[in-house]
Length: 340
Ligand code: PEP
Ligand code: MN
Image (spheres, rainbow, N blue to C red):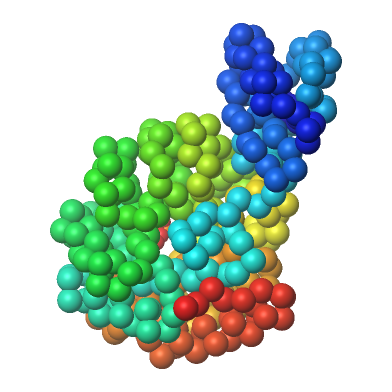
């Protein structure tokens, strides 16, 4: 249930409604919007309680949210959530680009990638230090050493850092080095991890589970918000279907649907979504046309030498070309690529 306060509601009135709800055993999440304050109420909807609340001073209306996700829903918050790092805004009018190698492979290699992405104006560097690999015999990432290289890359280039965290125990360590913590597709329903991420303050990039419905994905985000962290970026990265020409089937219909259902920013990963660099630029363009707030793309100085996901990584030249093409699509839908 959601309690919408009048635009002119006073602070004491809002607090009084919160107190009443808490006394009744409900959890309350306050969202202060531009026009009015909304209280997200966690617990069963009850008609008579709704009527009582509606009679309280300052209350405009009480809405029964029929969907299982509450705090992530547009019903709870009408305005888009914008995650800000100074001038860089994710979920605002501009389309952000995150780029870098699949994995941190070494200090020298990471710095090389960082310089490549910075040179074309990208502001956010990706790179996994903890890698969730299908095979235990594949390269598993440089772990803590890799995180240190990421921090060094930030110091040298000023780029923001996105990197994956695979379990709840590593959240504090990864948060020391990352600006945005990524939850991979295989961990979308690792509820201990989601809760832990909800208890810290850094933004979370939540990838869609490869077999997750949109509702399950939004419920995973709800776990993070329900613990108090509102800064969640949703990332469509492809789902499993019967099709094998692509590694996954990039579900671009999820973009307008999630934008409709939720206030959270949505970005698209055309690299994992296709599994082949050849299809990445077309899907990047399509993602922006569909309304995505950003892209996360795998870029490697020499994809043929990459320790993971080389076949889907763009080389620097192809990446530059992709940016130019997506820039034009962004303009045609009234947006700009946020490049510096
Ligand atoms: C990645 O971003 O490198 C990654 C492992 O992504 P996903 O979890 O979407 O497979
Ligand atoms: Mn990868």
